[in-house]
Image (cartoon, rainbow, N blue to C red):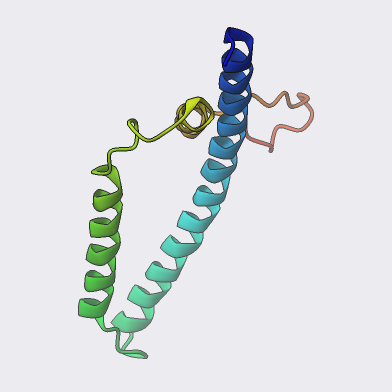
Length: 114
């Protein structure tokens, strides 16, 4: 493979990964807000005695999810990835850690920057 092809795959994969990362960040923010509101509503309803919550089941589900996430981090990804996959992975990590720059006119102050 020539150097131009590697550079094209690397730049394209990084750009694709950055877009995926930004999208995952926006979607995960919405999902986490909804999950937080759901758990708060469970706490409020349980404190009023209207429902009975199986907190042990919720704790076991969370621990299973964390165990699965930790098992993914132990995989040896870098030895099996190609140029496109590695650059996409790095772009995704970049997109997850950086925020998008959104120019909002001054008369729309209620819009926040992402």
